[in-house]
Every structure is written in structure tokens, then in C-alpha cells.
Length: 241
Image (cartoon, rainbow, N blue to C red; front, side, top):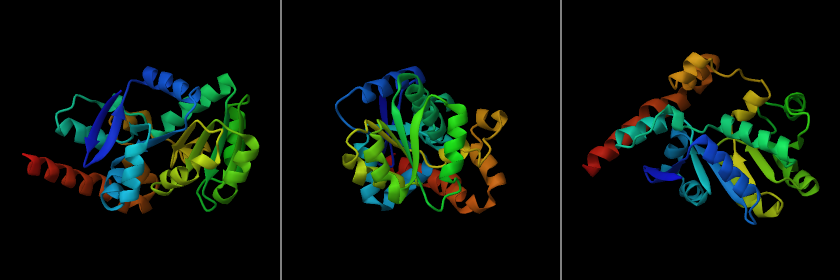
């Protein structure tokens, strides 16, 4: 597993087949592991939120989620491509496949006012993963449901940085959990509340543009990721040189 740093924030890369092996290792270990899927918004938030920056540094795995991260690494001379991403959606799919096959239990923690409603996610997952043992809870009920279910996998869709901070603060209260990951908007794709970008967009790393078309209210967030983030990365590189 390779580790890089962008504006003081770590990101990791490992091929998908090795990522699957690492997830198995995490699930069979005697420790708890937090995973973050890092995109440009994470990097920007970490510049002003030291607590969040520390949490990202202490994660067991911080995957590359976002075209901007790949661009920033390439700018700094690292040989990476879009194939090096492990997005929140793909990480979630991998964990659910493993859990369904191996019999691990999964707990989802969602925002009460989120785009995806717990009951909708529950029924969509039941259709796709009939053998999966899982529960879906809103934030205020998650600890109690988790203590009853005793899951090995915790997937938190509260949005960053709240989901990463929530995991860091509450993981020890769910002693059965071996992997806890913040998955953000992945829950909206799982529930089909949002449609995934067509392959033509994904192949060029333009999922952000697809989401802007579908959700114009994301303009401010996308401006930060596509304008502010590159500016800071270039500025940092020039200062180093």
C-alpha cells in the first residue's frame, strides 16, 4: 500500500484486489479500523478543521475518491491514473459483497433529514443482497441498534466531516465493529435516490459534472473542488519549488 500526502492530508493507494485482501485482514483482526474515502472537499476541510485532519491521519486506510486527488498527485510527479481511485460507492459495494458471502453483519447510519430514507435503503438492499444481515438506523438510534445487532461493518452516511468525526467518537461504543467507513453520498446511489453517472462520464472522471447537472445546488461545493482546490495545490507546489 502506497501513502501520499496532499496539503498535509494522507491518501493511500493499493490495487483493488489487494484492497479486498486488506478488508479481509481488517475483518479478521482484533482491532477496529476506520476508513475514509478522501476527495478534494476533505482536503479543503482539513485545512481549517484540525480535528478532522487528525482523524484522517489516524485512519487505517484513506482511499482516493475523486478526480482532483489524482490530478494533484500527478502534478507532484506520482504515476497514478483514474484507475487508482477507490470511491465510496465502490468501497461500499466491496464490503457488502464480502459481508453477504461471508456472513458479516452490517449497520448503516444515516442522517434523519437525508435525501435517502432508511426504509427505502432497507428495501433496496434486501432486493440486491437477499443473504445480507443488516440494519439501517438514523444517527440518534445507531448506537442502540448496533449494540443489539453486533455488526462487524459500520457504514456511516452523514457527509464529511461529520461522518468521520462521528465514527472517531463512537467506534469504541460498538465493540463488535472491525471496519467503520464514512460513505457519504454512496447511500443515495444504493437506495437509487440518485442515479449514478453514465460510464462515459466516469471514464473521464467527470462524475462531478453529472452530479452538478442533476443537483445544481451543489455548485458551491463543486466550485471549491474544481477551482479552490487546484489553486491551493498549485500554490503549494510553487512555494515548495
